[in-house]
Structures are given as C-alpha cells and as structure tokens.
Image (tube, rainbow, N blue to C red; front, side, top):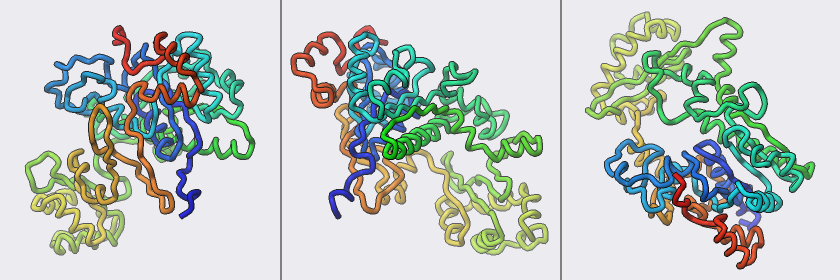
Length: 439
C-alpha cells in the first residue's frame, strides 16, 4: 500500500468550525473524520448553550442525582471543574477537531479571524440568523480575503425568504417542516417527542455533501463559493411521497403508528418484563409471508382464504397483529428475530441505548472508538458508519477542550510570536476557561 493510498480524502483541507448545538458540530466532525484539519473557533467571553452544555458554570448539586441523561449529562454526573469539556453534547460530536479561542466582538479579534480565513479552505456556521452579518463576516467580505474560500451558512430557514430571520432549534424546525406531524405515533401524543430530530442528521449530512461538491468544483475553477443551506429543507426533501400525495390527491397523511402503507408491519410484545421487550416484523411480499409461516410452524389460521394475497392480508391487519403477538409473547425478542431472519423475514428487536452499546454486531464492526479525553477519561465513543477498503482510518483527536489548541493555532497556523501570544492571553483573546461572569 502506497503512502498516497493511505491518505484520508480531505487531508490538506482546513475547516473553520463556528457551529452550535448538533447539526453543525456533527457535520464538522464528519469532515474531520474524512481527514480535514478542523479548527473550532470559540470565545471565553460568551457561552453558547448547546455546544458545550447548558451553562458555563452549572451547579454540581443539580446533577448529583440526575438520571435523565441525554445531552445535558456530564461524565460521572460531576460537571465541575471544566464542565464545558465534560458535557455529553460536546463529547458526542467533538472528536477529530482542534479548538482555539478568539474574541470576535473586538476589532483585533475580527482581524485575527480574517487571518485564519486567509489560510483556510472552508467555513461552516449554523448560528442564529444575521450573526455573521453583524460581525461583518459576509461571504463578500471573507472571499475578498480568500477567493478560494468555501462558506457554508446553514441556518434553519436559509439566508433569504420571509422566514430567514426566524430563530429556532430542532424541535421548532421539526414542527415547521411537518416532521412532527408525519412522524407522530398518534395525535394524542404529538406533544411528547424524542430529543432526536431529523434535521440534525439530514442537515449535517447535507453540509458535508455540499462541502465535498464545492471542493470538487474548486478543483476545476480555482475559486470557492457560497452555500446557503436551509436545514428545514433537508427535512422537507425526505417527505416527497407525502407532498406528492397531497399535490395529486389532496390527501393529508395521517399517523400509521407502527404500520406501513404497502406492507404488514408491527411492533409486537415479546416475553420478558422489561419495557423494551418488543420486536418489529415486516412482511412485504409472498416470499416473506411464507417465511413467517415456516417460522411460526404453519399455524391453522394462516390457511384461511383471507390470507391468500397481500391485499387481503392488509385488509385484515388488525387480526394479523393479534395472531403474531400471541406468538411473539411466548419468545424472547432475540429469539423472534433469529427465527424470522433465518426464514428471510425482516425482523429486529427493540433495543434501548444500553442494548445497542453492547450489541455484538455493532461491536464486531468496531463502531465504537476507545478514546481518552483529558477531562472525561477513557470512553467508548460512537464512530463513523463507513469503512474504507484501501484507507485505514485514524482517530487521534478526542473531543477538544475549550481553547485546548490555542498555542498550536496561534503560533503554527497564524505565525504569531511568543510575545504576541502572551499579549493576546493578557487581553483575554486566548484562554481555556470561560470568564467568571459568563453564565
């Protein structure tokens, strides 16, 4: 294997990361995983809720008995000291990056940022609307510094249009895009939602794809470009069938709960007392129907003429569910999965996060990465979904602490002298802790 083949796709590309919450940081992490040199630009003067937790200085007492988990969790339920480096939100999408601090609210900080732009390839930002414009960082201004610059601005609604000034998080955008409505289990429970939002992943993947395409164009033209990405539209694109159904038939899609419009499908209770003792089964065609028949031991009820074809079976879906659940209740969810998969029937157990973390298939594929982060210790982190046949992946940068790589960024990347660096430390551009007044 030659050295050329060993390189990751984006080695030699530098990305400025000024992103918040989930979609933006997840996108820049993937760019880093692909080999890009990603530099997170933050400030010790201002805390942005989401990217590094909920508060800059959270009280320990509030988390001692916190079992809610999720993005507000801290390693060992002990936020301090350095809470901003120990929160779950940072640690789930903070790897493969370096971190520096700049005070962008003062003229010298803006000039330092432009110096960084001059030696970089891509900027990714998904801040509230108009933040970059207020800072004077429009594409016109920054491309004047670096004509090869690729700038991705990924706000919720895009930079143009009547909603371009609207602010929001994943929940607000899910409501706007009809994602809440179309992914509901029932109208009675529409207000009870998971913390996972479609826009965070669709938005992140769209940012990565747009960056790759812009790099490909730059290879041909020598010039960068501006990418106005509306994260809400990345979700709208996923519901083409529903929009076409409405446009053609005037139909507003209702919740199907666990069902599917062209298949027999359900989530069925299995043996066991835990709340996750369920398995999901799907039957799309006659072949899978026959597989189900074999797995269930050719039960008498399946010989009735009402089960002769898929249309008839679908008309009797309620009765089908009762028969299948009577069978699954006598078996462990994993047994249900193995019996059905053996006969070619799509089936899978319902797993909680603990189950997924210890799942043998996921672990045999080395999905989880063992990394040691200075403030959280050795942990298993979710890794990328892809594997290269000719390029070994390298994950050498655990989630970055606030300003952890300041000296490298200022001296190696920007060429600042030791004296200049010390002056910027004194003037509070550079630091690895939020200032005491920052909430």
